[in-house]
Image 1 (tube, helix red, strand yellow):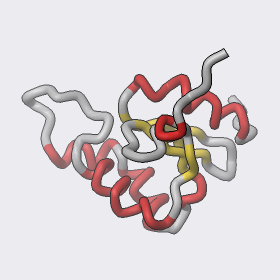
Image 2 (cartoon, one colour):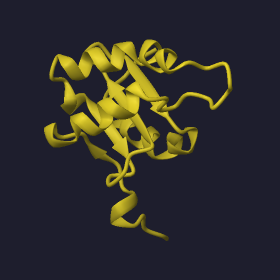
Image 3 (cartoon, rainbow, N blue to C red):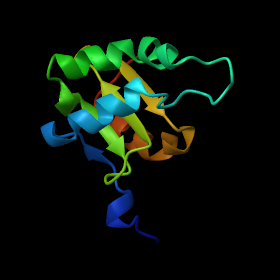
Image 4 (cartoon, rainbow, N blue to C red):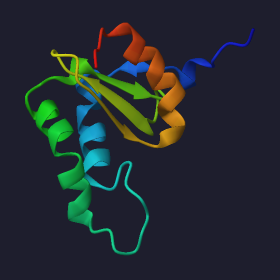
Length: 104
């Protein structure tokens, strides 16, 4: 059995990290590097997540890895799950999704 290094673990977003995650969501976080993508496209694609951060819902976000996030998962109060960021974060984010009681 292997263990995940502490720096690579999933964690909930705390208020101190909101500014960093907001900047990531505003600047192509999880967007393709295609030449026709515009800077504004990232903001539009992540509008719901940015709105949730503005509302103060940072405790509903899980980020991975803990130190310098490349992926995140928002879990809404109604069971809505919204992932963003690098797809490589999928497996760790699944761990969080299983704990939040989402439904189809």
